[in-house]
Image 1 (cartoon, helix red, strand yellow):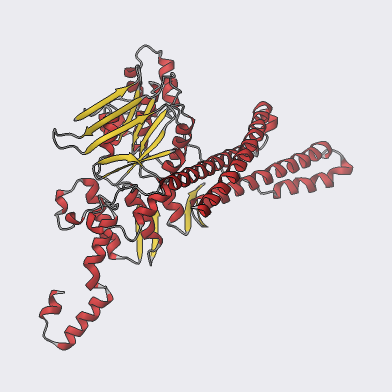
Image 2 (tube, rainbow, N blue to C red; image 1 turned 30 degrees about the vertical axis):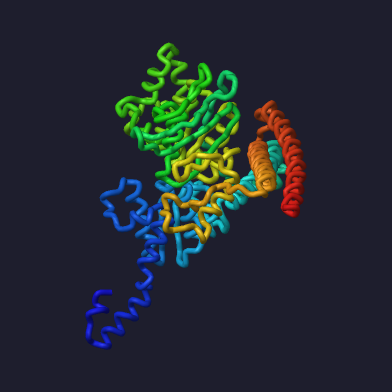
Amino acid sequence: MQEAETATDPHRIAEIHMRLFDIDAHSAEARAAEILVGLGFEQGDLTRATREFSGGWRMRAALAGVLFSTPDLLILDEPTNYLDLEGASWLESYLRKYPNTVVVVSHDREMLNRSVTHILALADLKLEIHPGGYDTYLRKRAEKVANLASQKVKQDAEREHLQKFVDRFRATASKARQAQSRIKMIEKMKDISVPLADRATPFKFEDPQELADPLLQLEDADLGYVEGVPVLRGVNFRLDHDDRIVIIGPNGQGKTTLVKSIGARLQLLKGQRRAAKAVKIGYFSQDQLDELHAGQTPLDHIRDLAPNLSPAQHRSIAAQMGFGHEKIQTPVEKLSGGEKVRLLLGLMAYTKPHVLILDEPTSHLDIDSREALIHALNDYNGAVLLITHDVYLAEACADRLWLVHNGRAKQYDGDLSDYRALVLSADRPATSGAAKGLSTKPLAPATGDEPKRASLGALKHKVAELEKEMDTFQRDISRIDLAIAAPGLFERDPARGAALSKDRAALTQHLQQAEERWLEASEALEAAKRGA
């Protein structure tokens, strides 16, 4: 740009301007700002030196630089790990429209469903490419496994039949030729290999002792770290035993401040915090990974937590966390990030808390482990308070959303799809900064249409919940189908086969009932929309 302003040779000037046009240099500043704001930076941050930012924000800046360069081949390895839900949603949208080739390694299921056209899967020592997103890949793979399992059952039966003939007539002169023919048929059979299902060690949160609601309350509370400088003002919050709440809002707005205050890890600046008598709170955050004793093993941590148990019981607890004979004696400093998360969650679960407060629990977990965590949270009979950038986890576990924004924390009137649409809306005021990411207008302006909106919101929420319920039933049925298709199951373990069949019948009935309720709710929603 500078040379274009100082050059005197007309040919050189033309050449420079042609090159600047080719790389779209005149819009470079605006494009850079759009990317940085989309990833969460405020307008005032755009001219600051990167050394002034934390490591996580520097990672965002590095990602922005790669996106800005628009390479022919863009390779991203876990790009959402340092993003909040808003940044991850923006990146999904950006990659979906990216003009060139993108290869992304990710454990973010929503990204793999929304942003890619093919899945390149490394499984069973083979690299295979599949059209569609991740859910499509899973469905096709399950169908393939079920088909192979069925073919293997038939092949095993045919081989057994041929072998019986050979064993019976091999020594009979008149049947020797036929026996030899069947031996050749057996030898020509190519063994059908059925891929083993990917299974993560399940998480388990034991049901706590019942307590009367509410479990926790904040009343007119100001939250923060410095007296007179609250991060959040006037917070009124109630948590009951059956609540599943996801805290949403851009980074830097106070989500962690809120959950720390609810969990009594941060003293209130003003107001009241009330807790049910004997309530136990399980708290997880990424910061706690550093609180593990680096030189101690998982077994050491379990002994410290439960010193009165026997060595056999200690090992049993470790096994439930997914630590086998070798890992149980491995120092924490040599464990992977996912293994450390498992250890922390397992230690927390042992105390049977009434409330689980989880701040970004999935950053180090693979897809199968995230799925296992979702099942554990949905099976848990206690309250869950969750901060996550993982949209799939949030949608699977949340029945309510709380928005932290502009110094306030309030229940959000809408579902996660509504919020994502708001985050990505074209009229989002960029001047307010990406750390705000939302309009500064009141979240729910007072109008005469509030009852209609509330009714529509409730119906949309009910339809969404029933869709999640149906998806869960369908996934469980698919898993049982795969288990039933295992060769020799009913001969090897008839009791398990019968139990699986019984479970499948019950799940099918539950699915049908959920579908009926979904149809009714969908019809009611459409009627409400027409009347709005």
